[in-house]
Image 1: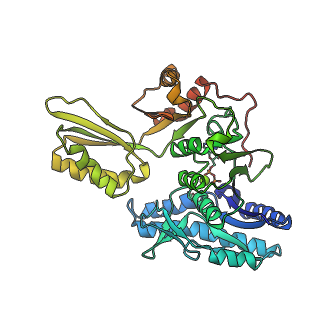
Image 2: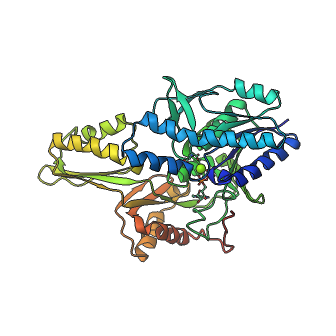
Image 3: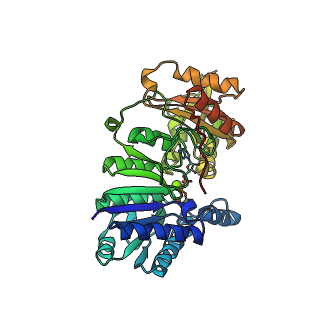
Length: 412
Ligand code: ADP
Ligand code: ASP
Ligand code: MG
């Protein structure tokens, strides 16, 4: 009997009506003879609502309490879905990350999975009970509730599929797969039938929130068959596969918009050995991911340093940087969260000169100023002003000829 892990995202369980539809889909899969393990996100908008509540109290809540708060969204949803399944005559049990347990490191709000016990789930399956697991959460070795980062229920689902050696992990969401750009920003984005782990990893880490980054890493590592589907219509889907399983290859696979990005600049800092380390080390210790880094040419022994970090870490980063800035007598620290990052992604970039120039031309034709640039083998990223983000994505998407003539419509 095939064992399938089915993950339903927030928009798929946004109301009791949605939860009922999901319950019917699970029941019909079970009636067809599939063994099903379900993973759910919080009901759509719930995580944001909880975040706003704690923000009303303080801009820097204790990580332990913030995670305890956010985990309730998934816990409530898993219990509601189990209640609905039982009301339809199926046996179902909800499980929190702590009950499994799904053990993580101590990094509150961006914890990584260390171990995942499946005995309780296997027993439920053997007893004919449908397990409904609360995604996005775990418990640290010291007993604190942790969360895996925004969008982390995808990672719970893939980790479970790997641990249970499931035949497939199905990610149900509000779009019918992965597109060449976010179809809600770029209506002419093209549907992708198969995408390589490496490309999906780049797209996800550069803002394509359709899949959580860590879920792709795990699926590749444990070779989990992974598919993205719509909860609302079943015609198309995207398989995420090994590079060698893809026949056709394009220079650019997709264009992304990363909104969770801010920059910090230190003006007039001493240009001498050890300064960059002194500034960035406290950020690394606080598990803050520093992305692009630019240092200006030195003038009279002084220079400027600018780097980007996730906006969700801006308050803590600003505090840490200001402390060092006082020690090294920097003239000024400037923080800016009014920026976004537009990236073009594809394995053809390294072998095709001129890709960067094409991207810069597309942005300049829309009069969009590029504030920072970074490139790697697989991507070119430009930081631009926030208000031009969506326009920038459409311009770059058009410049690389990725458009589809049949416009996509989002299903609700
Ligand atoms: P869920 O709540 O199901 O986890 P998410 O909101 O996390 O759903 O992810 C789905 C959303 O991802 C889509 O509604 C779409 O706006 C966005 N998205 C961003 N980039 C892409 C892309 N390249 N392809 C498809 N969807 C994308
Ligand atoms: N509920 C969490 C979020 O909104 C996790 C998830 O949906 O995967 O980010
Ligand atoms: Mg998601």
